[in-house]
Structures are given as C-alpha cells and as structure tokens.
Image 1 (cartoon, protein in one colour):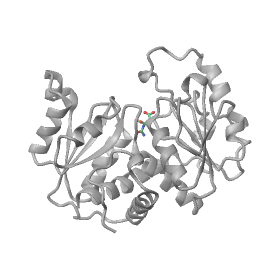
Image 2: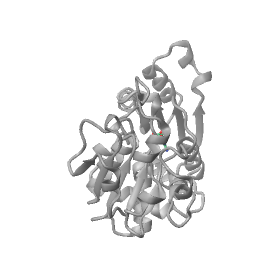
Image 3: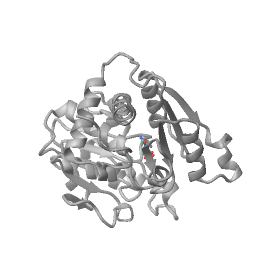
Length: 299
Ligand code: NCD
C-alpha cells in the first residue's frame, strides 16, 4: 500500500489502517539487513530539545536505509543568532533535505515547519503535543508481546498532562481497540482526553488487571511551578512499586519511553526485571519503527 501522507506530524492525522500499515512495515524491518532504499536521500535531524534514544535511533534508521544523515547542532547553529524556526527549516529544505526530523519545545512546531517546506517533516516530539514515533514503538512492543491488541488494558501513569508520549499513545492505542487508563497526581492529569480513555485518580485502581503499565517521567521543565509533592511521597502514591505491580495481570509488562528517574516513578527492581520490563525492547524497536516511517515518507 502506498503511503498517502506527506508528513508524520501526529497520530491524530492517522487512521487505524495507517497505524497498522506502519506497524507492519516496522515489523518487516526488525531483523532486516542494512539497505539502500534511501540511497542519495538526505535526512536532517533538527533537535531543539535534548534527546538520547530518539535522536540516535533516527540517525541509525537513516544510516541503515543508506541515506545521508545530518544532525543539526542547534547550539552551534544560526538559531543562536536569532534565526526563526521557519527560516532554519527553509534553509534545510534549500540544502536538499528530503526529510526534516524535528524535536522542539513548542507544541505545533512540526506543523509550522511542514507549512513552509517542500520536504517531508517527521515530528520527533513537539512540546506537550505529540510524539508519534514513540507511540508506534510502544504499540509494536505490545503487539510483539501479546499478538492481538484489541481488548488489552494499558495503564499510563505519571505526568500525563505534559507528556506528548501519553497523548500520542492515548490516540493510537484507543484506535486499535485497547482500553486505556491514565492516572497521576491531580496536577498532572490532563484537562481533556481522547474518547475512550478512563481518567483515574487512584493508581492501584488504574493498575488493577492491566496487561501493561506504562510509566512516565515528571516533566519539570514544562511546569511553571515545581510539583508540590516530595519525591518519596510521589513514589509512594504514584510510582510503580513491586506491591502495586501485584494488582496488574500476572503476565503484565512494564513500559517506559525513557529517560527513567529511578526510585521516583519506578522502582529499580521493576525497571531492571527482564521478565517484566520491555523498556530496552522499546529502545531497540525505535530503529525499525523510524526506518519504516522514513521509508514510507521519503522512498
Ligand atoms: C520522551 C520525550 O522526549 O517526549 N522521551 C522519548 O522521546 N523517549 C519522554 C520524556 O522526556 O520524559
């Protein structure tokens, strides 16, 4: 099936069929040898916010497909001289970029770039809006573990309000028939959630019977005031502990998009348990998922 969208700005733009198509393409690339599908194409990573997993896996994905991959170093770029996002994007386009992979602190930044360039734009996280490739990774990790996704229960826990990962996952997982619950401290719950998402104030209730528990970091950098909750209390009320995990289904998996704040949102014993944690599988799947997205948009 030919890919119909010029950009990947968010899960909100995708149908269930589009999502399954990308997951199938990514699955086919999981153990694939490096290829030349994007030979001669130029992929530019423009990351205005810090990143380890997302930036490196996009780079690796572009390399595995045979593309020229460039990473724009924002700190050493003309951004520091006052160049606007739109002008920087036009510059990358004029240099011959076939895709711009953008991470930015402002919600809607990827859509802004898409509106001024001729090449494909992939949103690698824009403010509190969306992080579509992370949600695709998470869905693929679940599909590889459980097979059929419809009817699964996924509890997303922590800073839902400021998390673009939570938002993209709420949109994606509900489209695939997953029952999504979100929970966290009242100040970190969102004002609105997509249809079909249950908001729960009590974490034990949210975790009860869940097939997967997805933990999120508290995004202090996106809050005007510090969260008025000491870290030990946060861990006790909203962290994933061994005791709390016992409420989940016996086969339940632990997920986290990273970076982890150990001992805050998640206990070491759970983060490091190879039988239950799929956290590093999520990282590994970042490469085939991003290869699939780049190939769909640029090849
Ligand atoms: C997340 C992000 O940047 O949105 N990380 C990621 O991409 N894997 C989550 C976070 O920063 O906590």
